[in-house]
Length: 277
Image (cartoon, rainbow, N blue to C red; front, side):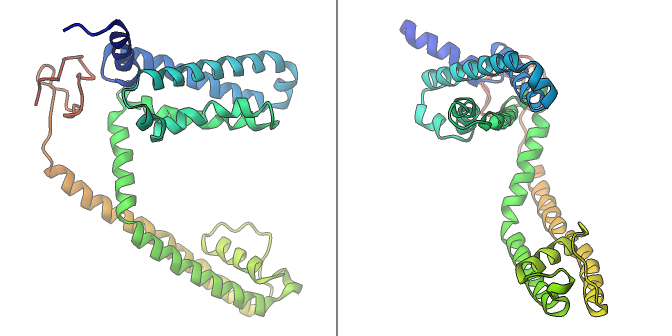
């Protein structure tokens, strides 16, 4: 049975806009990638005082051109999406919305247009069109490892917070305001800067005892930095072993191993996978 003309139009544009594994969808994402990079580049260039003063009007027009373009795209995404509410409140839906809002806000709040830089997050959607699926999967793999090690990391950071609070308080009592440790919070700030081995140099101990404590805190900092790395690495190794046990799928036509059961088409050759299990 033939679909109504309006339904066919929505289905066609849904595949172009939301499907990254079709020829037209890939072309759309490549064009979108260029538009995003150009719009972000304009924000970078516009922040340079000399260029802003000389080309203020052309940059302003270009900024609004891209904003209206992305606004139209966002509206079309809502129209063709079969689950409009799900898209609007999804991660990418929120990113798409927030990427166009700053320019409109600049009409009321001067300078807010520079928040357009958040538009660069939209590049996450189009990674796969440049055969970067493996990198997208790697990022998801890392996020999965971070998620499963969050309890251990939270306990670790809680312990570090307690440590710098105690050390900062001691340094306030030992050094005092006369040596730059003006308050306990400021002394805790010094302890955090020291334990992370950043060392801004804006404040440093002057007494012998304070320098001994600072030296011990610096040495402790090297060990502390290694702890979260070890926690995440352990979780990644565990997840990697589990991932190797999962069954793999591939395109029956070209053998592309980046195919998943959720894909409708092969991203390499465009072969239809609807009937492929």
